[in-house]
Length: 498
Image 1 (cartoon, one colour):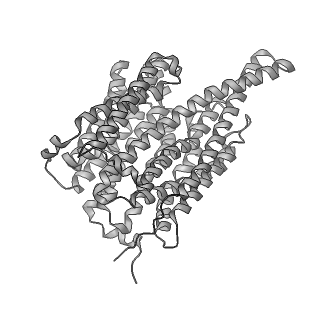
Image 2 (cartoon, rainbow, N blue to C red):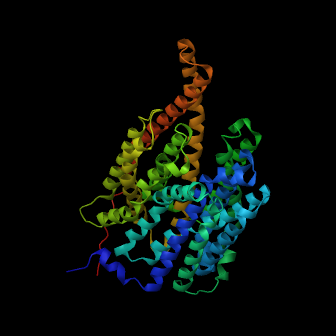
Image 3 (cartoon, one colour):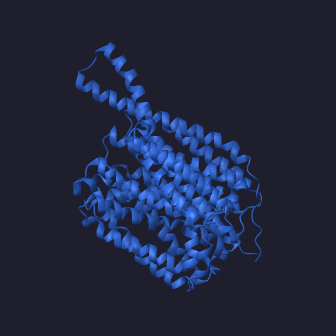
């Protein structure tokens, strides 16, 4: 009787397993560094005396650093060796994290977060590359389930951590210091487990350096436009206009260089394969929809119910904690010969859409408990969608193409997160203005309340209605993706030989 995939996992060489665990810790740490930094920014700017407008550039700089490195990280990891590249990136993150709380100058703070973002952006692609390169077929899906946790686990656990540091312990410095123990553990595991390899200097002359220059500048400009666009009123701002126009032009040049260069950093020709091209589009939209699970309820509770981050922790843990087991449960399901991953994916999308429809009934009287059902549905639907998607995409990728695929999928991961945050910010403003106009007209006719109470009620109701609109929009988007998912190429469960 042959062993099951889960039973075979113990046969992984200890050093390989240690390196993989170390890289997984690094990838999770990179996600937490981003999200906790964003959630705790209000407390950080208050402690250091930065204005809200100026402090907004702290997040922008981090995101810009993260996205500009992501497409190129795996190329440098192969060239310099995973062990060397990982160690350098993690040491940079830890050193900056240690120093940041003592920085009083905004320009220096922004610059350091930019560098830290670059180092963090280099880590998540390594996890995907290692899963495809090092894991045998019989447990590869479990490795992909670990990668899926960067989209399902990290954003939710970040809420708990941010609440602990800012409200529980009242030590905002841990917003940055929290990564240091994880950095030490990750460096130890990877340096013990990863092989010592020399630098492959022969690869440097082969790099598409012109394309890389175009890519770095274009992705930075577009990140600035997406993260600062709403604050600066989009195309009414000359800065945003210049960033969008120049960013798109340079992005086109980057794509042209990568498509024509004999040894590109990311092989965009892979997107011609149906499951990769269609899957990348779906993944980008999926990450935007997933923001309905964290950003929307927290925005509502903080502005309407006057919750602090600490009080919203249960909503995040309802989604985050189950991911420790649900990802691998989905992976086990996909190993069954009778399972069609496309249908599991579609069912996951339907579950997420249902969660959004449920939460779309939000009213100004809601509190934390009213969101519980929607969060439970999100907790179930998210791993079903992400793990199935990764299986459908990676199954058409040869292991030697893993680094190229990792660069592509992680670039879309960051873009999806950026687009989601930008879209929600824009819709909250535009739909809020629309609902406020209607409510002002209605209340002015009724004369039922004092002007002071009227202003507060209109603000609460317009925000609530705007959040409901966004929930319904994301629910429809999830439903519209289902036909696209079912149109992906069928991939049978892997045939595992023992």
